[in-house]
View 1 (tube, rainbow, N blue to C red):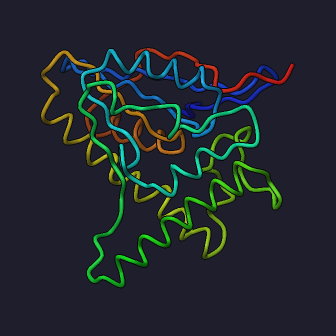
View 2: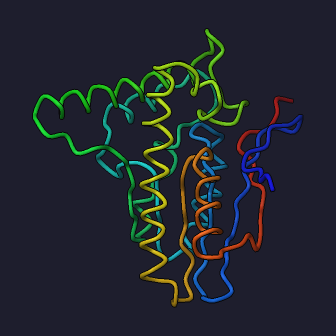
Amino acid sequence: MAMQFIESSIVGVRSSVLTLERRASPMRFALFPMVHVAERSFYDEVTARVRDCALIVAEGLGEGGAPVQRRMARIRLDDLVDQTVALDLDSLGIPVFWEYARRPPRTSAERLTETATDSFGAIALRVLGRYGDPIHLPNLDESDDHDDRWTEGRFNRWMRDRVVDRRDEALVRRLASVHRECHDQPITVAVVYGAGHMPAVVEYLRGEFGYFVQDAEWLIVRNAPS
């Protein structure tokens, strides 16, 4: 059964916050499909709901990480804000597991190459997807930066490996660890990740541990222009 995480319609763009439960244990997962550029009110609403959670699993490097991306995030040509500017999970006083998948480089040269290519990828996504669409790459109204146009061609397959597949793998490994350690506790674990990763999360938790969607709520990412 297909599940919709981001909806774009005449009213604007919405994100579906999902609560996953499991009959055999009291722990719940709250999934927050993120669009990385949105109206500030969207991030305010996400923050308000995450405050009620006991743990957070989030995409990125946390406070002080990825300085190039953080500087880029402050450059806006519209009335939207970037997630790295508007959503400060480290300030909530809740334990955060930051997930950022990369293969451990074996040499100094490989480490430099890894950093350079990751920075290039981040800048490319932001410039091409955020500040214009000169060659018709994904933008906010087309459901975040993960869609089929990143899967065709050698470069795009390389980008998908870095932007989607590696992060999916790191994320489900972390969720499996959280489940094993906390499944007998009556807590809610927030999963704050790009919407493109949520299908892998739901498929894994459903197939591996028997979680199911108990509730869903739409949050407005961006209102349609009036």
